[in-house]
Image (cartoon, rainbow, N blue to C red; front, side, top):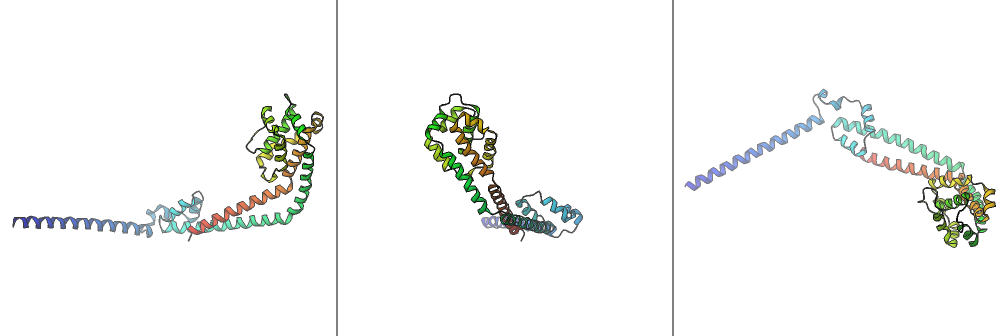
Length: 274
Protein backbone atom coordinates (compact mmCIF):
# COMPACT_ATOMS: atom_id res chain seq x y z
CA UNK A 1 0.00 0.00 0.00
CA UNK A 2 2.85 2.34 0.90
CA UNK A 3 4.50 1.66 -2.45
CA UNK A 4 1.30 2.49 -4.29
CA UNK A 5 1.07 5.84 -2.53
CA UNK A 6 4.66 6.65 -3.46
CA UNK A 7 4.04 5.72 -7.11
CA UNK A 8 0.92 7.88 -7.26
CA UNK A 9 2.85 10.84 -5.87
CA UNK A 10 5.59 10.32 -8.45
CA UNK A 11 3.04 10.19 -11.27
CA UNK A 12 1.36 13.32 -9.95
CA UNK A 13 4.73 15.10 -9.77
CA UNK A 14 5.59 14.08 -13.33
CA UNK A 15 2.23 15.34 -14.57
CA UNK A 16 2.83 18.68 -12.87
CA UNK A 17 6.27 18.95 -14.51
CA UNK A 18 4.82 18.16 -17.93
CA UNK A 19 2.07 20.75 -17.46
CA UNK A 20 4.65 23.32 -16.44
CA UNK A 21 6.76 22.59 -19.53
CA UNK A 22 3.72 22.77 -21.80
CA UNK A 23 2.68 26.13 -20.32
CA UNK A 24 6.21 27.46 -20.83
CA UNK A 25 6.24 26.18 -24.41
CA UNK A 26 2.88 27.78 -25.17
CA UNK A 27 4.12 31.07 -23.71
CA UNK A 28 7.21 30.95 -25.93
CA UNK A 29 5.10 30.24 -29.03
CA UNK A 30 2.78 33.07 -28.09
CA UNK A 31 5.72 35.44 -27.67
CA UNK A 32 7.17 34.45 -31.07
CA UNK A 33 3.77 34.94 -32.72
CA UNK A 34 3.34 38.38 -31.14
CA UNK A 35 6.81 39.47 -32.25
CA UNK A 36 6.07 38.31 -35.79
CA UNK A 37 2.80 40.24 -35.83
CA UNK A 38 4.51 43.36 -34.51
CA UNK A 39 7.11 43.16 -37.28
CA UNK A 40 4.68 42.47 -40.12
CA UNK A 41 1.90 44.73 -38.83
CA UNK A 42 3.38 47.30 -36.47
CA UNK A 43 0.68 48.98 -34.38
CA UNK A 44 2.74 52.05 -33.63
CA UNK A 45 4.76 53.23 -36.64
CA UNK A 46 6.57 55.81 -34.52
CA UNK A 47 8.22 53.05 -32.52
CA UNK A 48 9.59 51.49 -35.71
CA UNK A 49 12.47 53.71 -36.87
CA UNK A 50 12.73 51.98 -40.25
CA UNK A 51 9.10 52.78 -40.93
CA UNK A 52 9.95 56.48 -40.96
CA UNK A 53 12.62 56.22 -43.69
CA UNK A 54 11.40 57.32 -47.10
CA UNK A 55 11.76 54.80 -49.98
CA UNK A 56 14.16 57.07 -51.90
CA UNK A 57 16.48 57.18 -48.88
CA UNK A 58 16.24 53.41 -48.62
CA UNK A 59 17.34 53.21 -52.25
CA UNK A 60 20.45 55.28 -51.45
CA UNK A 61 21.28 53.03 -48.51
CA UNK A 62 20.90 49.89 -50.61
CA UNK A 63 23.40 51.24 -53.17
CA UNK A 64 26.16 50.60 -50.62
CA UNK A 65 25.04 47.06 -49.75
CA UNK A 66 25.88 43.78 -51.46
CA UNK A 67 23.13 41.48 -52.72
CA UNK A 68 23.32 39.18 -49.70
CA UNK A 69 22.75 42.08 -47.30
CA UNK A 70 19.91 43.39 -49.48
CA UNK A 71 18.26 40.00 -49.25
CA UNK A 72 18.55 40.07 -45.44
CA UNK A 73 17.04 43.54 -45.40
CA UNK A 74 13.91 42.10 -47.01
CA UNK A 75 13.39 39.92 -43.94
CA UNK A 76 13.30 42.79 -41.43
CA UNK A 77 9.64 43.64 -41.99
CA UNK A 78 7.04 44.12 -44.67
CA UNK A 79 7.95 47.76 -45.25
CA UNK A 80 11.64 47.10 -45.87
CA UNK A 81 10.73 44.19 -48.12
CA UNK A 82 8.66 46.49 -50.35
CA UNK A 83 11.41 49.14 -50.38
CA UNK A 84 14.11 46.63 -51.31
CA UNK A 85 12.02 45.13 -54.14
CA UNK A 86 11.23 48.60 -55.50
CA UNK A 87 14.90 49.59 -55.36
CA UNK A 88 15.99 46.37 -57.08
CA UNK A 89 13.50 46.93 -59.91
CA UNK A 90 14.88 50.44 -60.42
CA UNK A 91 18.43 49.10 -60.43
CA UNK A 92 17.49 46.43 -62.99
CA UNK A 93 16.00 49.11 -65.24
CA UNK A 94 19.15 51.23 -64.89
CA UNK A 95 21.37 48.24 -65.74
CA UNK A 96 19.21 47.40 -68.75
CA UNK A 97 19.59 50.97 -70.01
CA UNK A 98 23.37 50.79 -69.53
CA UNK A 99 23.53 47.44 -71.30
CA UNK A 100 21.56 48.78 -74.29
CA UNK A 101 23.87 51.80 -74.48
CA UNK A 102 26.94 49.54 -74.52
CA UNK A 103 25.40 47.32 -77.19
CA UNK A 104 24.68 50.37 -79.36
CA UNK A 105 28.25 51.56 -78.87
CA UNK A 106 29.54 48.11 -79.84
CA UNK A 107 27.37 48.03 -82.99
CA UNK A 108 28.57 51.51 -83.93
CA UNK A 109 32.21 50.44 -83.67
CA UNK A 110 31.57 47.30 -85.72
CA UNK A 111 29.81 49.29 -88.44
CA UNK A 112 32.36 52.11 -88.50
CA UNK A 113 35.49 50.01 -88.71
CA UNK A 114 35.91 47.04 -90.99
CA UNK A 115 38.15 44.57 -89.20
CA UNK A 116 38.80 42.70 -92.45
CA UNK A 117 40.11 45.77 -94.27
CA UNK A 118 42.28 46.85 -91.33
CA UNK A 119 43.58 43.29 -90.95
CA UNK A 120 44.64 43.22 -94.62
CA UNK A 121 46.79 46.31 -94.06
CA UNK A 122 48.34 44.71 -91.01
CA UNK A 123 49.21 41.57 -92.94
CA UNK A 124 51.42 43.69 -95.18
CA UNK A 125 53.16 45.25 -92.17
CA UNK A 126 53.53 41.80 -90.59
CA UNK A 127 55.12 40.43 -93.76
CA UNK A 128 57.54 43.36 -93.78
CA UNK A 129 58.49 42.46 -90.21
CA UNK A 130 59.20 38.86 -91.22
CA UNK A 131 61.18 40.03 -94.25
CA UNK A 132 63.35 42.17 -92.01
CA UNK A 133 63.87 39.25 -89.67
CA UNK A 134 64.91 37.04 -92.58
CA UNK A 135 67.90 39.34 -93.07
CA UNK A 136 69.18 38.11 -89.72
CA UNK A 137 71.18 34.88 -89.53
CA UNK A 138 72.82 32.86 -86.74
CA UNK A 139 76.16 34.54 -87.33
CA UNK A 140 74.56 37.95 -86.86
CA UNK A 141 72.95 36.91 -83.56
CA UNK A 142 76.24 35.39 -82.38
CA UNK A 143 77.96 38.65 -83.25
CA UNK A 144 75.61 40.56 -80.94
CA UNK A 145 76.05 38.02 -78.15
CA UNK A 146 79.84 38.34 -78.26
CA UNK A 147 79.74 41.95 -77.08
CA UNK A 148 81.46 42.22 -73.70
CA UNK A 149 80.56 45.89 -73.30
CA UNK A 150 77.76 46.49 -75.78
CA UNK A 151 76.59 49.99 -76.74
CA UNK A 152 73.58 51.24 -74.80
CA UNK A 153 71.27 51.05 -77.83
CA UNK A 154 72.14 47.39 -78.43
CA UNK A 155 71.32 46.57 -74.81
CA UNK A 156 68.04 48.45 -75.13
CA UNK A 157 66.91 46.61 -78.27
CA UNK A 158 67.78 43.16 -76.90
CA UNK A 159 66.15 44.06 -73.57
CA UNK A 160 62.96 44.87 -75.48
CA UNK A 161 63.17 41.51 -77.26
CA UNK A 162 63.36 39.84 -73.83
CA UNK A 163 60.21 41.73 -72.78
CA UNK A 164 58.48 40.78 -76.03
CA UNK A 165 59.11 37.06 -75.54
CA UNK A 166 58.56 36.92 -71.78
CA UNK A 167 55.43 38.72 -70.45
CA UNK A 168 56.67 38.17 -66.87
CA UNK A 169 59.50 40.66 -67.35
CA UNK A 170 58.26 43.98 -65.98
CA UNK A 171 61.32 46.15 -66.66
CA UNK A 172 64.42 46.41 -68.82
CA UNK A 173 67.24 43.95 -68.25
CA UNK A 174 70.08 45.98 -66.76
CA UNK A 175 72.46 43.03 -66.73
CA UNK A 176 73.85 42.26 -70.20
CA UNK A 177 74.51 38.64 -69.17
CA UNK A 178 70.74 38.19 -68.85
CA UNK A 179 70.27 39.52 -72.36
CA UNK A 180 72.98 37.17 -73.66
CA UNK A 181 71.01 34.15 -72.45
CA UNK A 182 68.23 34.77 -74.96
CA UNK A 183 70.82 35.08 -77.75
CA UNK A 184 72.53 31.80 -76.89
CA UNK A 185 70.18 29.56 -78.91
CA UNK A 186 70.02 31.45 -82.22
CA UNK A 187 67.59 29.13 -84.01
CA UNK A 188 65.21 29.02 -81.08
CA UNK A 189 65.21 32.82 -80.91
CA UNK A 190 64.41 33.13 -84.62
CA UNK A 191 61.62 30.56 -84.34
CA UNK A 192 60.08 32.38 -81.37
CA UNK A 193 60.12 35.68 -83.23
CA UNK A 194 58.62 34.17 -86.40
CA UNK A 195 55.89 32.36 -84.46
CA UNK A 196 55.05 35.31 -82.22
CA UNK A 197 51.31 35.83 -81.56
CA UNK A 198 50.80 39.59 -81.58
CA UNK A 199 47.35 39.14 -79.99
CA UNK A 200 49.10 37.90 -76.84
CA UNK A 201 51.05 41.12 -76.32
CA UNK A 202 49.47 42.72 -73.25
CA UNK A 203 48.95 46.44 -72.71
CA UNK A 204 51.64 46.46 -70.02
CA UNK A 205 54.10 44.81 -72.43
CA UNK A 206 53.20 47.27 -75.18
CA UNK A 207 53.85 50.20 -72.87
CA UNK A 208 57.42 48.97 -72.31
CA UNK A 209 57.96 48.00 -75.94
CA UNK A 210 57.02 51.49 -77.14
CA UNK A 211 60.50 52.56 -76.01
CA UNK A 212 61.63 51.22 -79.40
CA UNK A 213 60.45 54.52 -80.90
CA UNK A 214 63.20 56.33 -78.98
CA UNK A 215 66.02 54.33 -80.58
CA UNK A 216 68.11 56.26 -83.13
CA UNK A 217 67.78 53.96 -86.14
CA UNK A 218 70.64 55.35 -88.24
CA UNK A 219 73.02 55.35 -85.31
CA UNK A 220 72.09 51.75 -84.47
CA UNK A 221 72.62 50.68 -88.09
CA UNK A 222 76.14 52.12 -87.98
CA UNK A 223 76.86 50.19 -84.77
CA UNK A 224 75.42 46.76 -85.71
CA UNK A 225 73.54 45.77 -88.86
CA UNK A 226 72.31 42.59 -87.14
CA UNK A 227 70.86 44.49 -84.18
CA UNK A 228 69.36 46.94 -86.68
CA UNK A 229 67.46 44.05 -88.33
CA UNK A 230 66.06 43.07 -84.93
CA UNK A 231 65.15 46.71 -84.35
CA UNK A 232 63.22 46.90 -87.66
CA UNK A 233 61.32 43.70 -86.80
CA UNK A 234 60.45 44.91 -83.31
CA UNK A 235 59.38 48.31 -84.58
CA UNK A 236 56.98 46.68 -87.06
CA UNK A 237 55.51 44.44 -84.34
CA UNK A 238 54.94 47.43 -82.04
CA UNK A 239 53.35 49.44 -84.88
CA UNK A 240 50.95 46.57 -85.55
CA UNK A 241 50.02 46.30 -81.87
CA UNK A 242 49.49 50.08 -81.76
CA UNK A 243 47.32 50.05 -84.87
CA UNK A 244 43.64 50.98 -85.09
CA UNK A 245 42.85 47.31 -85.60
CA UNK A 246 43.95 46.38 -82.07
CA UNK A 247 42.55 49.56 -80.52
CA UNK A 248 39.12 48.72 -81.96
CA UNK A 249 39.50 45.04 -81.12
CA UNK A 250 40.30 45.81 -77.48
CA UNK A 251 37.40 48.27 -77.31
CA UNK A 252 35.07 45.55 -78.57
CA UNK A 253 36.39 43.00 -76.08
CA UNK A 254 36.01 45.49 -73.23
CA UNK A 255 32.44 46.37 -74.25
CA UNK A 256 31.50 42.69 -74.60
CA UNK A 257 32.94 42.02 -71.14
CA UNK A 258 30.96 44.90 -69.61
CA UNK A 259 27.75 43.76 -71.31
CA UNK A 260 28.22 40.22 -69.99
CA UNK A 261 28.90 41.44 -66.43
CA UNK A 262 25.79 43.63 -66.45
CA UNK A 263 23.71 40.81 -67.90
CA UNK A 264 24.83 38.46 -65.12
CA UNK A 265 24.08 41.10 -62.49
CA UNK A 266 20.60 41.67 -63.94
CA UNK A 267 19.88 37.94 -63.68
CA UNK A 268 20.96 37.89 -60.03
CA UNK A 269 18.86 40.93 -59.18
CA UNK A 270 15.83 39.48 -60.93
CA UNK A 271 16.19 36.23 -59.00
CA UNK A 272 16.04 37.96 -55.60
CA UNK A 273 13.45 40.61 -56.48
CA UNK A 274 10.61 38.17 -57.06
